[in-house]
Amino acid sequence: MNSAIELSGVSWRAGKSFELKDISLNVPVGSIYGFLGPNGSGKTTTIRTFMGMLKPDRGEISVLGHTVPKDMKRILARIGYVPERPHVYPALTVAEQVKVHASFFENWDPGWSAELMARLSVDPSRKISRMSKGETGKLLLLLALSQRPDLLVLDEPTDGLDPVVRRDVLSAVLDYVSERSATVFISSHLVHELERICDWVGVMDQGRLVAELPMQRFKNGIKRLRIADAPEATDAAPFTLLSRRRDNGAGSLETWIVRDWEPPMRHYFDGVGATVRDVIDLDLEEGFVELLRSSRPQHTNGS
Amino acid sequence: MYQSLLFLHWKQIRHVLALLVVASFALPLLAVHGLGSAVPGMDVPSLEAYRFVSGFQAWLIFYPLLAAGIGITLALSAWNWDHQLKHVYALSLPMTRWEYTLQKMLAGATLAVVPVLGMWLGSHVAVASISLPEGLNAYPNELAVRFLFAILLAYAAFFAAAAGTVKTTLWVVGSILGLLVFGAIANDVLGYYVVYFSRVHVVESVIQWMAYAPGPFEVFTGSWSLIDV
Image (cartoon, rainbow over all chains, first blue to last red; front, side, top):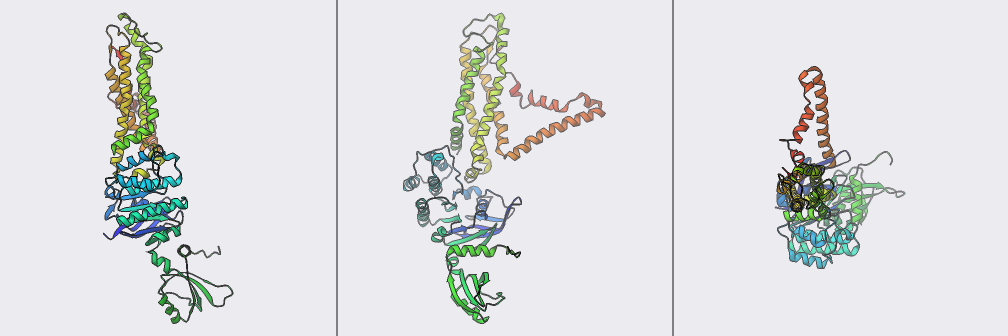
């Protein structure tokens, strides 16, 4: 088994308003896979398809070597899940919720649970309905980690949390991964948050997976080029051109945003009579924005 | 897992359940000692047995009503938190959907035993507190069993109805009502052409069959008398 999660041609439609379109993604075992995308891009819906909560209209899904939804019971026993919105019972205390949750998972580790409770400063006597967003976030992570899962699925786990809690949550995840070599699938729209921890990244937009690549390539491979005498056709280019625009008042200069860039690719421009004036690194957020911009349909009506 | 689901259901309904247990305990006592009933400890002449029994009649309607109320309350509360949490927690647990539903249903059915015990105890206390006229007998155990079956029937029906979305429930209820209306109209139209149908009322017969022996809802319309001949 090389993939912890594998989706192949998955489509799902919710009325006329939204659909997942032909999603194929591959999360390598042992990786920390960042699932990026703006709000409403389909991240949570994609997660719900491989968690067996939604039945796709088309496509195949396997998780931890088992088929979804056929082997869902075995799959879910090995997944620690932190959903986008708290899914725990508000009328319970932390200790009650932990006890209830533990009864469903064979691999539940009570010692580890107690350790996490102390480390994350979660008060076991506290009623869940009275907990702050940060406290609830820590409880959800505690529940997910105490199961000793092989796969952690975290859907916007730090959304709305203050920086201190966010750091606590992420460091607990990283410690667990380094100890257990588990796979982590973490969705977020906070690009910088994932930049530090992920080794793979998938980018969703408008129900489509627009890119999937190692984080290193994502960070280093998206560049802004300033080109003199740029060619019209780019079919033979060894990189992917995301966007191009003519610089105002700069003669024949154009700015290109390219993906999968490597320094030897400069020679391509020599061959087409163009010159690379500058190669500018984009930070992850800029790269992310350019990637989304290039993936969206171009409007030609002047808007 | 069953214990956890039982705990969750109990945690949610415990205050309401306590009231329902008190009501179940009190109802037989009220029927015996309440308005229109015999005076506690009074020796009733055997000739007045009929008047004694008829004093309970006014209270009989409350038994099936209470049973239905308990069944419906248990059923709706069984799914209440799941609906609130959009079923995400339940669906993330390593259980098949039918296992989860079955265990949840069993947990609710277990809780139904608590008011039944209240009713059983209340019936025994009520019977012990009076002198029965000659020729009359008390049926506290039978009453408790009927109470249990009535609760379970209401619980099962509403548990199934409440499991779906509001849309699904409306579809099911709408379909049943639609079928009844269609049956009544079809009966009238056919009765205009065929004499046999002018004498038979299909919908009414179906409802009668459902509500009285050997129909499934007979448990509600049967004898609820704690004290009878």
